[in-house]
Length: 159
Length: 186
Image (cartoon, rainbow over all chains, first blue to last red; front, top):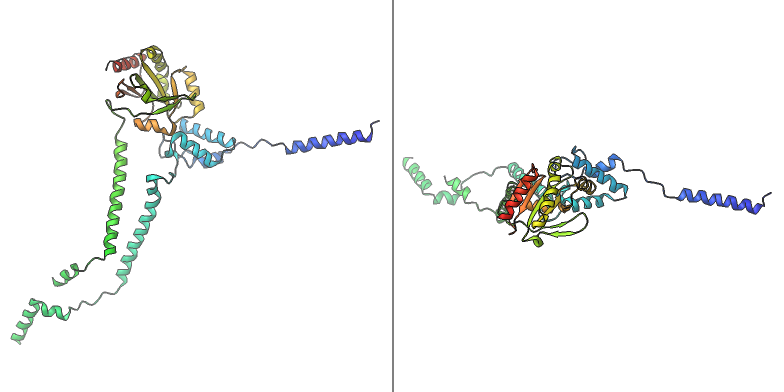
């Protein structure tokens, strides 16, 4: 026959054990292809230019995607992974170059060109919409013009 | 006639004139940037006889190799990658050449181009490569040499100038030894 205190000890130990098991960190699921490709899509392998890393079929790109998967499994963030690739292979692996040095032109020129074009069009449309001013020669102009003076004198003589 | 001359005489507003100047400056600036980029792209590899840029290679085991410290020796710089099938054709021969020439003042360096470390180390292990090898961090070394692909091998003379370039794999050990030996004699 067991004493009640012994029963309490057994139940208590079981409860503590269950609580610890429930609170133990579970293994995170491995990164999905979509998660890997979401990052890979923002990168280009220098070997196969113009093909984004997520769809590039070469062995080199497959290795890079495997590296992204490993880093994600280790808990790295997207920006940490991109920084790692830039450090390893240079900034040209990024689809969007970092806004530094001459790279600024990439970000500034398209909107600046668009704004300049819009302004030019605005000016052109405004001038086209304006009614044409009547072209009456100024009085002083006709008096000063020797050709007009000669013409008038000729007309006077003939009339 | 008089109307045309009157129209021509209308002065351009100052702001418009500055706007035009600014647009032209921007257009020429953009053309200059594009032109410089094109010139750089078309330049090709560094030429034989040109001074080789100084570079630093951090090897896979953490050692640092400076090109400037290797002046007076013949340096063989081989660009390779684990995913590069033609690189495999010459890998074993390069190691043999290294073993054959290392006591004659010839230094072999392997620059691992756009690769992942695990695969690169497996490649070195597979071909028993013992000479210094390291990743081309930030592709700085390959950009300095303006390589077009892998494998490419550059043999640098004792004077720090480029003596020979091999685009593509060496075909035999004899070819490697002959190239390095002729560079030693120059």
